[in-house]
Length: 404
Image (tube, rainbow, N blue to C red; front, side):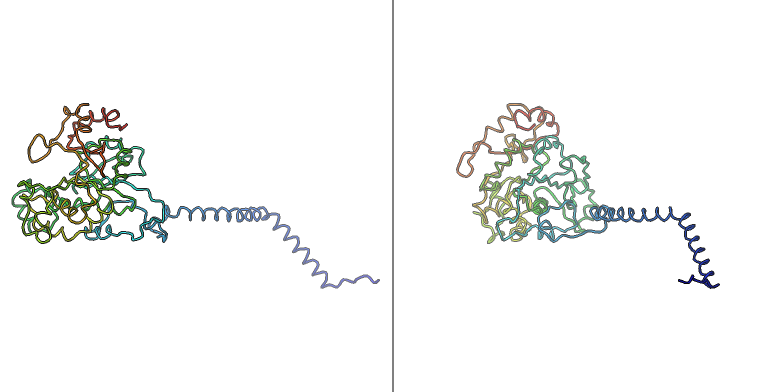
């Protein structure tokens, strides 16, 4: 075999390859660690980035508050509003609240709740007692407060009353407004709520309508800031649950304060024999709550023809339900009041009135029949209790009211 003879060109090529290899080794020597570090950073950085993307997707509502993803599942229809404030007019609110499912069987596990509707001018001075009443039963109740628009509630975040105020309308007390301003207000169309007038029933219907937006609310109780519970929550809830009737006071008062308030112009919609009177404070089930909210027929009659000395809040609901759904109401209220002291308003109890004997008398003095059987709980609530009664009521609550 003949040895290979190197030409000049081969020598140049070999020299070039040796030089290139030497340059590559130098490059690797100086930049190799950086390349390795960059590769490691790329691999682990990519994994970290993927993890952050997944985490971001899981908590996207916290990072993008302006983006609201709508769901198309059943929760969109049955989940109650998390915020009670809204900008709906009464007409829009009543329309939204009047929807009734035609399929009676619920396609989900529904836990029936009691809607406690507080109709008040301002604060709830007896709220500590109610806090004890509600404690431990969070899944079984809802709270709604209708107060003067000028009142700003300051309940702490842990309170059951925190942010439970519903939108209310402008309220005026004309007796406390300058005469010149009164004449000015006559030319401004503003809803004015006064006790005994239709605007008071508007507030009650507004409470019902807001509570109806939560499909889990089954029973609706109207109470004032001067009301107290007479039993613990379990007794109250079970009483409402087993009752076959709603509790709306409705009776035929033949005195000047009953039939004497009837306006013949109400015929043929309402006759004298159909005219009824009852307490403003009621408890109704969901069916009757919807009926009250959706009514336009009787509303128009009472708004036009029932004005002082005809007091709408004592006649509108009792008369309407007596005519339309007499078999669904018990014709009595669940709220006890004391008229024994005389006057246009029931007695207001003070600190010195609250004794053990007094509270026992409220429980035991009444005798009533519900659904054909004698009931041990004739009333579940009582009024009117002044703010000064709070401390003695708190002292008696565990033993006499069963509220701990």
